[in-house]
Figure 1: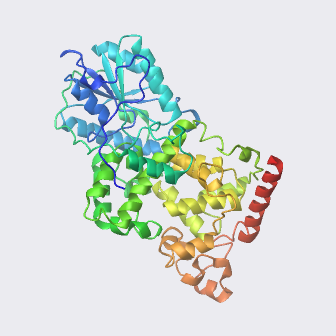
Figure 2: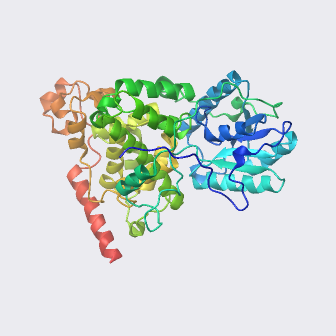
Figure 3: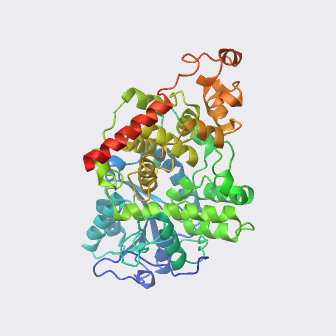
Length: 505
């Protein structure tokens, strides 16, 4: 079933809030605040549209609150991305006759201060799913409300409101397939809105300098691979989408599993930072010449998986810290610090795992199929707590999305919603041979194995001595011996799972 038009909504209404905020004009001399919490774009930005609909001058603001996120404050790779995304957004706003105000600190303090200084009576913001961001919006709204400033919240980062899709009994979905069917039945909101050509602007309030935020690495500057891989910002997101649609959408159903090929969209960081709307991406795929292809259908399903993760976090705010299946809280993890360091640095001795971890470090991103392989290896073969891997990904991913990161780590660990069972343990050698048969991916990120024949590339320890010598490899010197025997590691994981079941009983 295809998706049908449904109207844009503002959510969630708070006590006494006027849900028709976008039709309210505050007067020609009273500017409207636009809080760009994570919607760093002009096209199809409902919060911006809401601000413009008042007919007033608009003051765009980005607030950086390092403390509000707690353990989930921005990771290092995310800080790099944010710097460049804000630079791009500022230039885009200037081209539309506007500007970007930057302030650092608690939004509940800064926004009322700015509103008072310019006489604003209204603020528009996109509503995030992350618990700490929701709390920040709630606190800011309460503080603004005490001074008479009204707040309009808009669905801007998701296709559906995270509290919108429910079962027949009114509860949130815990299984993806019926969730996706329910989304189809509701229908995706209508066509994306274009970027405004002009944004009427008031005199700008005081702003920080982006350079003073020190978001970029300096000593050492580890971001060379990120610069070579990404172009943060709305224009970069549009180019990435156009390239994917024209070159890769038709084969996406198959190619998305082959890490050595450019078969995925690589849109995840652009979607996370709101540089492009999911509605824009959805309709672009649907309307493309290949929109009816199997590849397009699979791609749209992946967009719905993103929605599913967001609604899980919305209804389970402890998702990043606590297993949804509570019995897993008693799991006995090993806590192998040396093994963790080897995994983080791509030195486990298992080529597909090492390639993935080196790709992550070099580019701030990891292929989705490989994310499952590397996560499974850490959790199950090394019997390491999934939250440890989640935290490492959070710090190193440019698409460090709290909902997707937490939900997918729980999925691999077997303790989340609609999760793979714990006893589903990826064999990294078989995975490598199946999805990287020509070794293109491993050879790119583990170049010391380049001369090894395909037959032995994913399991160098199986190669005869003469083959290793011909490839210039001494295991343990040029490339590590395996950190763990794969069969023994698998059995260790199964034993721990059985022990968990006995303790729960």
